[in-house]
Length: 269
Image (cartoon, rainbow, N blue to C red; front, side, top):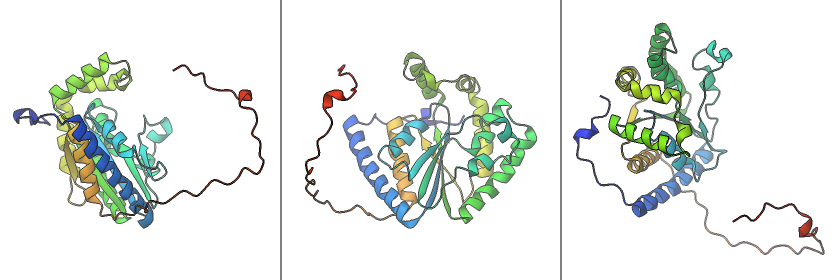
């Protein structure tokens, strides 16, 4: 089994106030990191992989919440088109790699081939093994080109995943998160564990290691992941000093159109 956290005494849940305070501190540091990435022209790629309902999306949202989307962007690719299926496998991912001064967060990545595609039979055996052979070399090329590559695997127990699936089914605002593929993966929990272990055997390398995030507790997972991400890239505080706003310029006789001629959103609340 992938996650044996059920054999360990679980810590108490984090106090909401403490969680919000710590998250706010980390988000301030993320803004500092963002400015450093922009100044130094760094190229950063962060990969988020793991079980369905493991909390990848929530962590990504927490990271980007206070960041400039022109500097930090999320890539979450859908099913490849017929044309993309004929391309070199890594080709459509290369298109989304960062330029200087950018950080890209991959909400699932080229590792789809070693997980979903392999277990669900969406690729051939030859394509699967070619991926495992090629992936370490591909990542070495990225790193040699100057890209900072960080890979996270969100690990969740079978019991916790089931609990989150049930929560999504019962919540109309979350039900869209459950696709037929997610439900199928639920049935194939052990098969996905085997695929993950095989993937790690080939792609957990010294130059590009996988970092495991224990994700049965979503709040701890978010804080731990963000804290670790900040530790991976040395940065300095470039926050400008507070400044005073100047006085607004005089309107010089300009008369605005009557407000009652505007079309407003109704004040329903």
